[in-house]
Every structure is written in structure tokens, then in C-alpha cells.
Length: 129
Image (cartoon, helix red, strand yellow):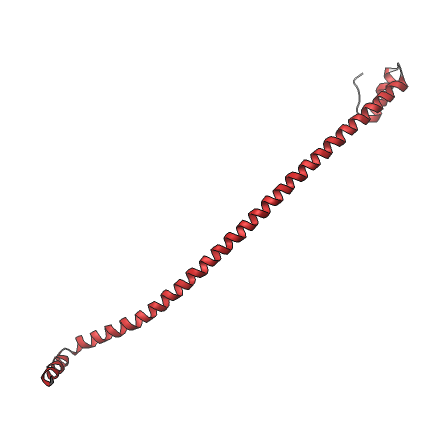
């Protein structure tokens, strides 16, 4: 055993650069391995954070889409209500106008110029006659 140690010592003295390089490589490997584990752990934490952010953004997007759909539905309902009211008012107004024209015709009896003048005054347009 002592002989083997003496041979090893002699070999190390002669090839000390190779031994130092081997020891240095082992130290660098251990140090970098420890740091790579920390880097892998940090990257995993970043990945989990990004996935949580993506999930949160998807939830927010769905909420916004639902709100947009709801507002669009309210808009269509409001437009339909307004159109319905407009049509009712338009029909009511045309009935009133017809009644007024009938009254003008009854009052003016057989005088077409007087009928034309009253209709022009009532509705704000002129006749060609």
C-alpha cells in the first residue's frame, strides 16, 4: 500500500498540471451543478407565474366578452323599443294629420284655394297650383 502511495505521489509530482486540472474540473462541475439547480428552480417559478398570469388574463377576457354581449343585447333591446315607440307616434301623428285635413276640407267646403292655403300653413310646404 505504501508503495502504491509513493508511486501515486511521484506521478502527481510529475503530472501536477493534469491533477490540478482534474480537481478544478470537479470543483467547477459541483459549483455549476448547484447553480443550475437554482436556475432551473427560478425558471420553473417564472413558468408558474406566467401560467397564472395567462389564466388570469383569460378569465378577465371572458368577463369582458360577457359584458360586451350583455351591453350589445341591451343596445338591441333599446333600439327595438325606440323603433316601436317611433312607429306608434308616427301612426298617431298621421291619424291626427288626417283628422286635421278632414276638418280643413269640411270648413273650407268647396273652395280649393282656401284648402291649399290652410294645408300649406299647417304642414309647412307649398303646392304647385
